[in-house]
Length: 191
Image (cartoon, rainbow, N blue to C red; front, top):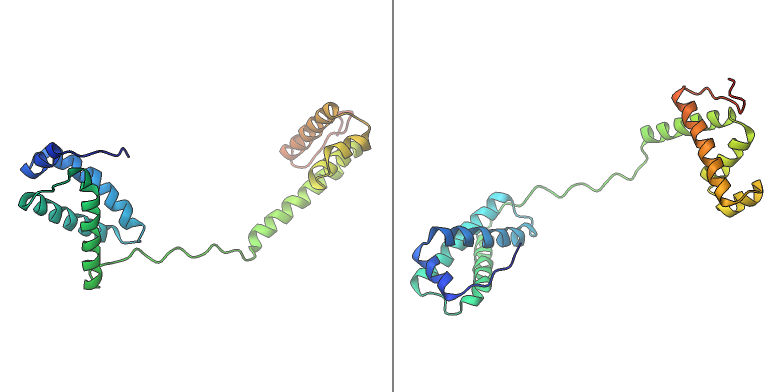
């Protein structure tokens, strides 16, 4: 949203009923009023009622006595809106609020999610047991135990660049095994 500065000419055209100026005024201040009232969790119909009543009163004030400081039209619209909100509040039943706020997310145990996670872990462990012992130890150390890569390099007596290559090969072998439904190929390529 771009903020606009208003001058006496704009307010004169607005008071005279210039349709382009009225459309701009309604769009500009309608959005600001919507933002202001939505934070109070009013329903859309209540916001629209308050917006229309606010505009009616602003136009009446413009046509009756005019506004002497056009640069303050934003503050004037905001204060008229505040008065309308207070009147609606006094009326009580005229204001309707949005539905209850959403329930807090359920952080409790989700047995279905736990079951799926457990099945996936079991499947990965089964696939790992069918891989070469080197790949099995490598994937377990890096991904399951989440050990520092320097420690893994020391254990396997390799540098970080070669670790990257070995991890790529091991992960590729694991992905292929998953695609085949659990069958793995050994280092020689035989099943």
